[in-house]
Amino acid sequence: MSLWQQYLDKKATVEGGMYFPRQAAADLGVSEGALMADAPDSVYLGSRIRDLVLKLETLGEVLSVVRNDAAVHEKVGVYEHVTLTARTGLALNVGGLDLRFFLHNWHHAIATTVVIGERTMRSIQFYDEYGMSIEKVFMRDETKLDAWQALIDEFATSGKPEFLPAPEINVTIPEPLSPEREQAFQERWNELKDVHHFGGLLETFKIDRQQSYRHAPAGSTKQVDCSVWEEVLQYVQANNLEIMVFVGNRGLVQIQTGKLHNVVRSHGYLNVLDAKVPEEGFDLHLRDSDIVETWVVRRPISEGYVTCIEGFDKNRQTVVQIFGRREEGNDEMQSWHQLMDGLLAG
Image (cartoon, rainbow, N blue to C red):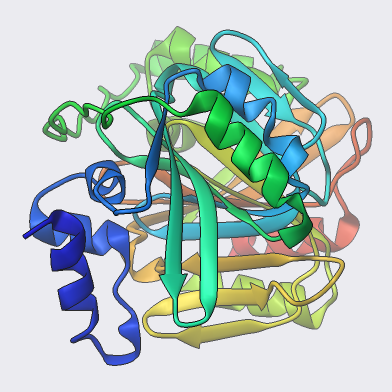
């Protein structure tokens, strides 16, 4: 029996059909990429990732789904204003498909057509070398079917993708900084002018994000209880704040900028269900029970400060980050600043 048929058989036994390929692949002991490649109407699109990504704009309005083990970020928009280098890239569309690419981890693309009842779901899915999903791009505009077919005709590749065995996860906790190194680190922290320079600071001192927050200048960071996520999202909704929600994996970070309208807890997830809100087109599904550390972090920039709340999983990987909306060249919103002040002081 094929992998795909085994998935369908199990899905038919699950109440409401809430059984998705990622979970099915784990249960079957294969990668999600291998499972999707086994679907009868899947077409392997090869590894010309850069060329394919640059043509996704021809599909018009799409739904982009980016996830990690504890968060799913779904955003409606047009795949436009994309600039790519050999290893990185971005789609700078604030309020739309706002993406940050790490292309060296993109290895395979698959086109899928799945019929569910009367619905036909067409998507182009991208996977890393181990078959982990990086992004799924779903068709929404039925008038663009010719463009869909043109992409398949251009990129279709014989055979199926060959994925490597998933590596064993080894979690390494960096050594704490000595008092002398900590002082030097704090001085460099206080000299930050751009939040994008933070990664270089971590590399210089050979520590990860969590370790850096423990060594940060007094008052700059605070570890808070992981139950705070629902409180923060409810506060943002009730006070009509504009925020930026970052969710990513090793290949892509997707950013939503906007307000929250429908914060709901359901089926073990903390959800934002704003897909049908025209100005948002956004859903978030956060399994906050899988967040084992939560930090509030305030870093200096040339215009003042930028503050976020960030959650980590058991493997010391970032699950989600939330910032107050900030225009380039401006300090963060006072209302967000006050919310974060309360958490930093609590």
